[in-house]
Length: 249
Length: 330
Image 1 (cartoon, each protein chain N blue to C red):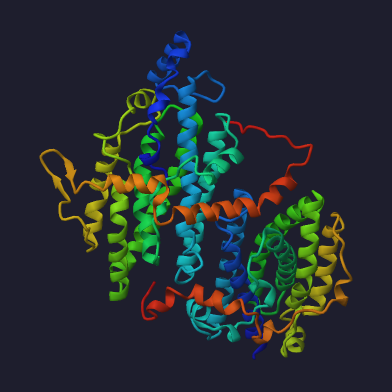
Image 2: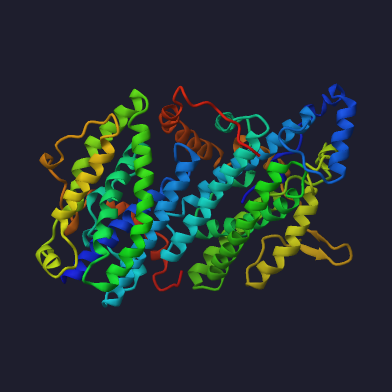
């Protein structure tokens, strides 16, 4: 695939799917303030994905609604981390923390991308992602230093989620060209920055951080290999849209 | 959304106790209300006023969070980016309203945790319309437009009430509701003027919801007793029938205008009296549902209970020995 398309699809699909998942917290949060916070982040992520699909549209791909609402799982390029069900709050929070640190750093790097339309979008998005990371940090520190029960839960979630989080940085065949053309600094570089960034926050908690780079990453998402959870999510998302594909909704 | 008068009429037993109030303080309290002053949290108030307002604001707050469930189901199914993002923002507003309202109710002395416990134990109620299902996207749109419209009628009236924190919360809520109304109207018009599949879906949803909408403002004034003192204290600002008539006046023409029909052959405006005539809603069914036997009561409470139970560890973790419960400022 063309390196620009390859990169944009990965970015957009990650944002769409995690935005969708975050929106599932409506009515289920541990406190109302977290229902509201996850909804805000979900709205941001949906908006981010729309901007990225719009960049794809400008490059000749289909309309954002068509791309988002009519593809099936094997055609999605998101990492597996974002498609996992929301589970309990400790998992959703840990995923949010690990993912949004990567996203913030990713879009900070993309702000100087050689592809100017993407750089412009990135300069806007990074400002929003900063708040996502701040929100995650606040809660990780709070729960990661609270009761034994909370620390134990957060530790379990961290151990479970880290291998999936490493899948964020899965490279595609276009990686060398993406880097050489100045589109993006590349996944290895991003992973290094990410590790430093999350480690600083986790050091302020009672959580034990394993040797992250020694873990086996959960890969495949960037090539359309997904968990059994993605297709049902997509079916649900497209349930109304597909009732009458000729209609304007 | 979503507050309605349907759940806050006084129980028969609640009217006792006034004889224990200091008559001088009571007279001064009533004089203040007559002068149009607001009652604030630290002010003297009769126990019955405190109890009734707590009950009313609490039920309004519950209606917001329970009401976010039937519409929330459609966030993950909303067709297309535009609808999906708008639906999320709309439902998020409702949860925000609950947050505002719980704070307003807390100024009267009951904590949010206590209120939520009473909700899941069935001790306190919420707007009865949310005990009905939303099987299609169009049902969700009916709620966004017409239930929110009903709530605005009610809340604009109550915003002129006597309790300061509740009035201020309602002012903020009504401002957001005005957007919801536009959103709901746009979504309904879109379906009502769309493809045959969309039009059918919309009409069927409206038919399903109409009986519940007609009960939204609570039983007929003929049946509703004990509201006199609440009106005098400006707790309740308009009677159920007044609200219902105003709603019909504002919205039935709009519904007919976009080519939808309403499933009540007797629905018409009597131009001489200015009152709408309609088939009397089935109040026995209304009572049965409000008392727990509706199609979705169990499901709504089960979802709320699961959320409370699954999130309990987070709330325990936040309650470090150093933190103490603080009643919010008005």
